[in-house]
Length: 170
Image (cartoon, rainbow, N blue to C red; front, side, top):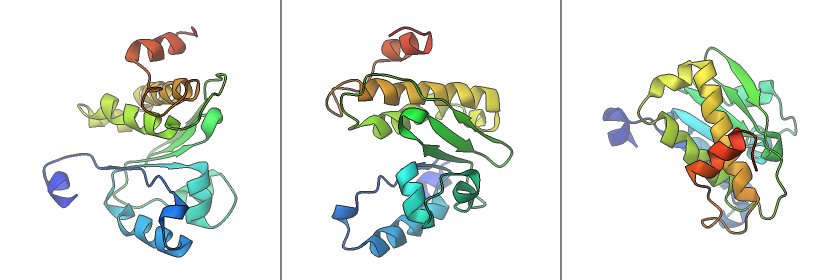
């Protein structure tokens, strides 16, 4: 991580919590937080927000309790309800897209995979709220399309599918 950071890479972190893979919840929390402060962009789900904060509130105060000084963007995904975003200078929400849910496997991965595709060549998007909102709409559309299909990898959308959904098509 340090070599990538030194080379100017934007470090993105999605803890992708799977408690059965850990010896205990405490160990999972400890290891997740062990590298938390090294990331520039962090994406967590609403369930992960509850787990990491120890309370059941999905609100701005809970999310911001996880903020660190080097963080550029914190995202909380809310399933079909979209996501919330937080930067040093602004925060807000993006509505989700309603689709007939077939399988939720891979939706978060699709969302988080869409982000670097859109910001890798222009990190300034993170500080430009209108452009960031467009990227997050794209990411939410990716997650929604993924839920409308079966399987994690086969369900990942093409850019054309995402653009069709964004334009109001199905």
